[in-house]
Length: 348
Image (tube, rainbow, N blue to C red; front, side, top):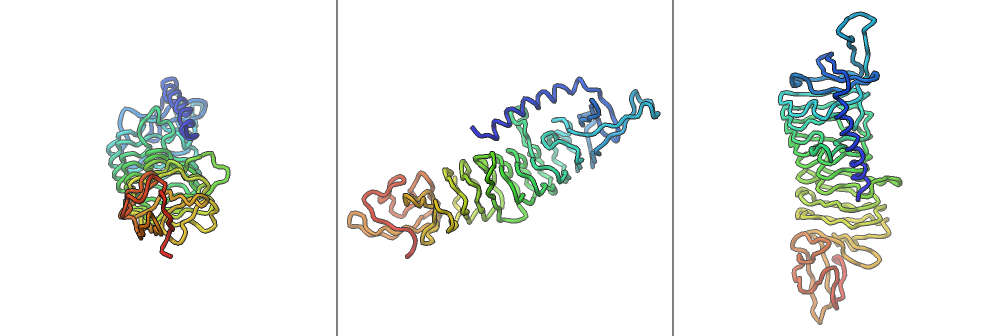
């Protein structure tokens, strides 16, 4: 089971405790915000009226105990969290600005905020998304169909599952130093650049850096993959994906490409000692065994001899790890094995 999923299980318990504890906290209202307060820390909560328009959450809320407005009753509370339902289904909410003091795991959920257009996040965030998914099933901004502007902090390393699922109006900058992108994180979104890089991290705790369907139905055209492990990353549904580049530091590949029928090019960096795309054959090959792991519509394999039968063949469509049915003459090939054939990759 994934390390990330285990972390979510642990944090989901914390999330349930956090939500249950709201009733214990004293509740107040200041600066247009409802909040609960304890020991100088404030949590933004849902109030008697839904939040509307443009909401700016300050780092510090100033309020007066027992509504007695004198210096003896003046209090200051640092905003550290937003309750899970504070903004949920606020149909007239247009924008939210979150303070630097907020915990990135407790920034609230905005599912159903169909008018939400802008979110301003602290640049200090290194994690983003729903970390209590076993308790609350939606991604943080899932279904925010009007969202057009959000600043994903440039040092963000983790984006949780379904964070931007269905944000069909959104066009975002992808973080340069990402370590983990959760399942279905960007379904239906677009990126400012159609070329994305999954970088190498020597000590990353995430064995499988890209979740299933993370880039489904986006405008991604080129994926440069250089994380240590290429595991459980299905690129199915990435219909615009045309080019996959496997970097020099990829050490383990157990992934498949789903139904990526638009893929036209697969290239392995020549400095990778474990995998190659020899003779520019547009396929991913395990070097030590010459096993073809997966190919694309432009993969070329030359069959030199096979039962006195000579054939030059290409893939008709995408062909992936467990099926060679895309060959012009599929009878020649068996599952990941060529029987009694001598063959070569590429045009040369």
